[in-house]
Image (cartoon, rainbow, N blue to C red; front, side):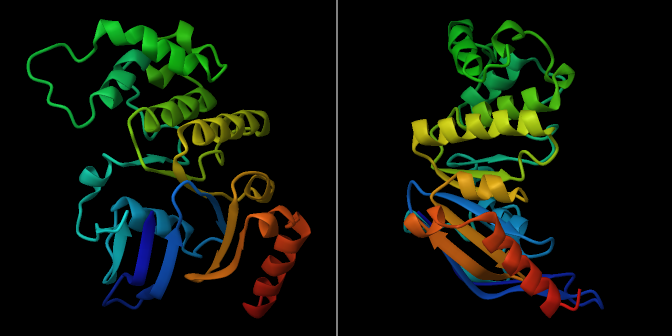
Length: 257
């Protein structure tokens, strides 16, 4: 599905703060896989997502999607087949537009608008059915501006919007981190259901070790731009939180912490 080959990525090049995060880094995800990515701050988790989405480019290396080289394909073009939900509930939706208007924008992504109204009234009932599945009563607030919703409601809407079109890859960038524990649980249940129903390949970055273990079929741990743990299928099912904490502690000792 998506493959990064020989990736080299520098930050702050030419300054005293220059850092090489990825050096000849390889990573691939099979079609239909749900991968949880964990690691300490600065390990390369979000950079991995940024490279996949096209929001940043590598200095060297190539990125392939379904066998096609997309290294130089800009982010706005990748958005036709890649969806992303961010940590901040305020990202991914337009706060000054209503739920209906936000969903209409997503529904028309990649289409020419012309001089017709952005919201197709025939699609409103379809939008209601989509958000009803979130179990948050959003179907009764379709004309409410998204900025007036709670963080959990906005994340649920962002998930639905990200999965509305025929995306092939879903990127989740710590999408439960800013939510309270109960809402985080609800968002993860919704996430798992949407991923399963659509069969969409998913990369989820999270700091929640329990979520990383409980959800998905593959678990990857990163450290300083390298993969230090990669468990899939039955091997992943046998991983417990203490196993992950042990690796984190070993890394911390090696780093002098």
